[in-house]
Length: 112
Length: 117
Image 1 (tube, rainbow over the protein chains, first blue to last red):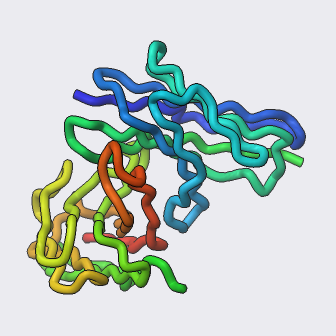
Image 2 (tube, each protein chain N blue to C red):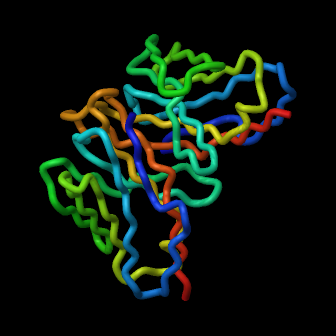
């Protein structure tokens, strides 16, 4: 069965540092992988998408990497700010089921 | 442009009662989805629709029914609510779907928190 692992423990970092969140998956090779941000009491909001043939994708202070050999995606926020505090969800697209499957998310807390 | 709107935002039910959650999108998206989110479980797909008049089962469809009579609306029904259905429900829509299309970016509603006593 498909399994997506995100660190369930909160990640606490100091403002200005780089936050790195991990998404590991097993038993399949996703065509692409998406990252979403979710604030308390709100729905997830799409941030970035990276395809299987891409190693890295950037958007402003955000960077996503995709290592299909390690079956892992890393999500980086550089120069983090308290406003970046939220839960971040990874969502690989599984070909077999033709659907996105979401990880449990990692909560990021950026302290001033 | 409202995006995806869910009603109601909160609801408390007694075991055995029925209810319907309404989702409306104004982006002319073809695909619509209902997820539930439970602590530590991530978002799990209940049902989805690939177009008006069509629906399909997702990962956890038991105890739920859906209908998509109009392209912009997707209804989620609970015929006989159970405490295990206490959750936060999210509706989402996407313009495309699949591995080689526009990559299935989802727009989510704000969620509906359901408590079954």
